[in-house]
Image (cartoon, rainbow, N blue to C red):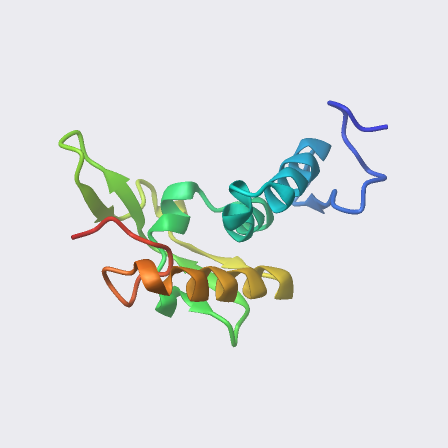
Amino acid sequence: RCGRHLCRSCPEAMETAGIVILHESCILKKAAKEDAHFSRYYDAIYILFHTGLRISEFCGLTVSEIEFDEMRIKVDHQLQRTSQMKYVIEEPKTESGTRYVPMTEEVAECYIAVYHGSLRHQCNPECLYPCKLR
């Protein structure tokens, strides 16, 4: 039984660096995958849950930062919105924000799906996710 408790029996629950993902993540991913509208975001949601990336880091990624041969993601900037409602790329606020994040085969497959699904929305071919930079 999961509810709001830690779900160690759920196959989607995993322990990483001492943090156990709650069963709610399983429910959210399942709902996103099965919903007619939100299913388009499933790969992004999966990536966020399984890498720990912040949304701004994920949205700021470019193709060159996904290192498939090393199975890792280089995080050295993020997409931010200014008070004037413009989107800009900024460096992380702290030194520890610049890092490499490991990725699994499943995460790599999701990145490929996100990339191929977003090609028709690109304003910059280097962007991984449909960006708002102009």
